[in-house]
Length: 140
Image (tube, rainbow, N blue to C red; front, side):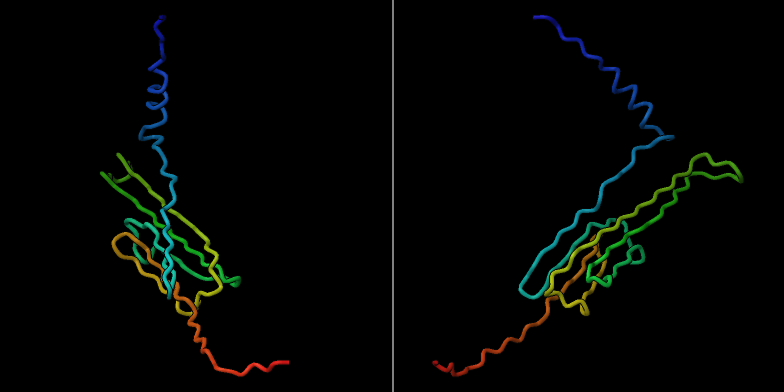
């Protein structure tokens, strides 16, 4: 059996080059979204760690679609002198999602809140007061 030689240095060279303070890794993941349904409503839950209510813009367009936009800018300063930065990091988080709402959602009663890192959007269903009326069916 012949020994197999692998170039173990190759990935390290690229990691050292690409994963530095000058070129940090980007986080390109979208927040997780859960949608659940009960007899009376739908609930949309969106993972939003570190976000506040002011970071969200939620609206319904003319076609009845629900738009969820989330945007946050962070600026971390480790040490700053008059005109020379020793280190400064900018972070920008932006997410946008459009959800097609079912026909049975009461669009006038939609509500949203942020708590414990989760954006919750309540989508109540239209109340259908179907009364079963007794009636006589004529036989022809």
